[in-house]
Length: 166
Image (cartoon, rainbow, N blue to C red; front, side):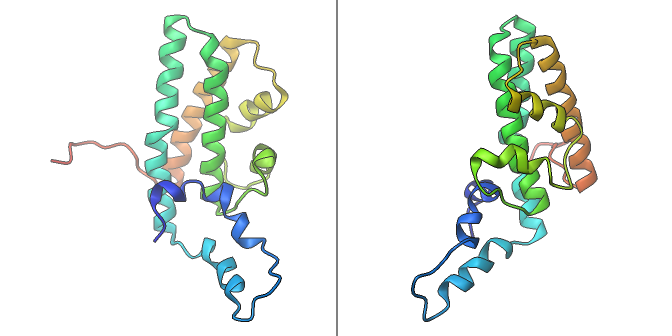
């Protein structure tokens, strides 16, 4: 079993196992290796997405809100970039698709069927480097955050805990 923390990078790293050109493989090891990234169950993908949502986007949105409210608008550019990068990984996991390279992650994520509302507009701003209007970028981050929560509900992934585990 792959560790959950490593599994969250599946959309970025799985291609290295699938696109192998063996020079010598008398036991078909590489053919078996090609199948491995697809063997995890839907439940595993959902558990990883749930945990990642808490570790990363949830925390990033908290930082975005705190910095916006305190007037530290310089962080908003970095926060927006972090939020779309984190969301791209979630999109890859939800679609069970990997990206060919990190450099094409955003471009390829826009072609995937299942995406949260608010993602496309913000990621296009990040891709174009047009992040000057801090108020607007903050509003796009909030729109994506709402879209992420709605998307998770549609996918049947509950990440909010209503009671303490003890």
